[in-house]
Image 1 (cartoon, rainbow, N blue to C red):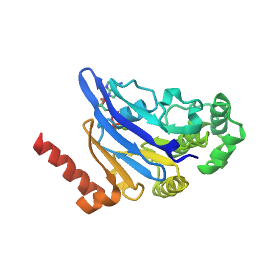
Image 2 (cartoon, protein in one colour):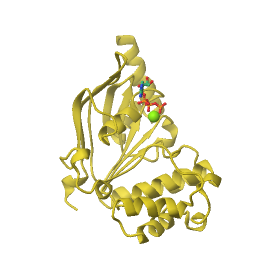
Image 3 (cartoon, helix red, strand yellow):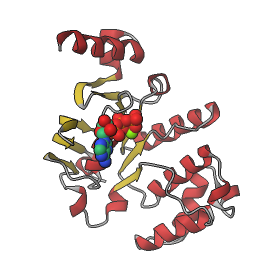
Length: 242
Ligand SMILES: Nc1ncnc2c1ncn2[C@@H]1O[C@H](COP(=O)(O)OP(=O)(O)OP(=O)(O)O)[C@@H](O)[C@H]1O
Ligand SMILES: [Mg+2]
């Protein structure tokens, strides 16, 4: 893989709904070899930003590229970017394995990838069960498995720790760490800062649609201590200045 292939570049992304800016002139990069936490409270604009990166929402202004190319122009998108935005979109009557096989077929990937990714996320034993009977944590794992089908350079996960038990969170942390260490890029959103402290090595902090800080976790800790303190200090600063 070429280094720049997994680089995500977000530049001036802006999106308003009904005259209110959900995302306002947001720019940041996601670097290969690292796990970037995309942090902010409910309604900060995280999901909207991720949807714009993935070409699911059209920005009013700005653009986002992966390896210099807009998502919509990627020839084999699943092999470049794997995304899990919501874990609710599964057909409940389908088995986990069937779900993955359908997605693999749609992307012209071999059906053996379905078995491989189920194994990767620790769902091999549940592959022949209906997704309707999966727990929230199992659906999160299936969403991650779907994102991994194309063995992508970039993983974009919206609140992937939601519904995971503590053991699941430790597992996710190790998995994403390994993914990044293989030189790939991981962008993972969360509104639960304590979950992110040990998961990420870079942070992009969003507040009311505005980017308030992009830094390495180390830089941020140097300035503010832990993530929660940093977040509190950065957002209260904003509010007093506003
Ligand atoms: N399709 C839409 N129509 C109208 N408003 C929207 C739409 N999508 C998002 N918004 C608004 O944009 C803002 C940002 O929402 P978004 O879902 O991006 O936040 P978030 O950071 O992902 O929050 P959460 O942590 O709750 O997932 C919110 O005020 C939301 O109500
Ligand atoms: Mg969201």
